[in-house]
Image 1 (cartoon, rainbow, N blue to C red):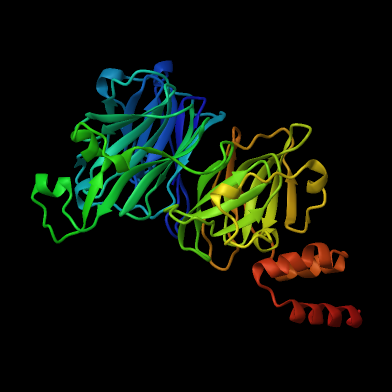
Image 2 (cartoon, rainbow, N blue to C red):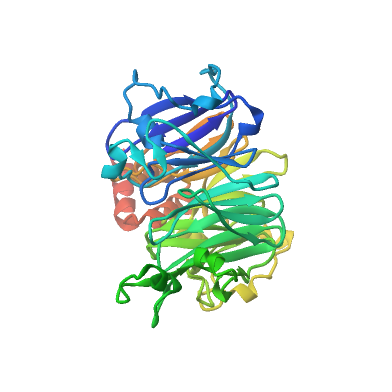
Length: 455
């Protein structure tokens, strides 16, 4: 599911589960400028709900899944709290201001089907005042091992706040170093969940939950849990203990200060989340296992300079680059060809400061750039995973202020290979493409030769 906040005062939802056709719904939002949406986050593990952070630092829980799956004539009659009635909104076009997405399959619990849940009604939005001061930056929805839901909110005062969505209690706050640019929740493994925090002073790791081995957790004694079950410590326990346990402090990651860090999803050679670190100085993107416990990167790619956005897939890396004239372009890069000559035993976070001067950069092989799209004055605001389709090489989605777009496979790799060979790009484009997607080059060259002589 994708949700976009538009400057005409609407939330636009688009849902697509499995092979079903897309469902689109529009929901009007408050016109009060204090309730302008700053950030959004879908509920983890199920994707049923949308958490909204507003300019006044209030939270709203929106029953997104239930809204989208209502019939067209069945409106949310109580879409807003009765004491905050809203005027009719303009349902026409507008510019996209913010966007969030849920990529998993939506799971609806039996309790949710009954209409009332611990998060609120499926027929109404619920407001949660936070009492937090400052200017809001971002919100993430975190669900711990017990199934308790928390909002993680970053502010302009470099603070990270934790709010319990059920009790509406402010659980605690962590002070960050530098201005917080972005938070990412790394939660594939319940035994080690953390925040990846990018700031003006570098990248940090804030542990949220970890499995305790060899002893029972603080939480197990409080709740009389079975001592034989896996036990966990969480940052919430640390807040409750009135003293931050050492493991749950904000830990600096050993990347360069200007490294652009973010999570990337992969299925080969590693299944799950990788942490990418793009270093502008040498234009190398390192990919690390998500625990960040290894001294060396899993592998690395030689990219190009002036990158603003990066989306990694198993075969290709799609990047947004700022050109010298200020315009943007999208590059399709072959992971196989862009792989650096440095082995994974020589790339460590302590050896990432090597820079390339401009003359050296011009000598880099450009065969790894398989395709380039000029975007002109259009500014790409974000990239997200593409819809999965059988027998198709995954592309990606991107969004601008004008809407959401998809970059997808248009023709088969084999046909494109033949077209490139016939146009004289056998070595520069056809072979890198074939190697990247695993084509049988000898067989294809034989077929191309046979076709040539038949003509």
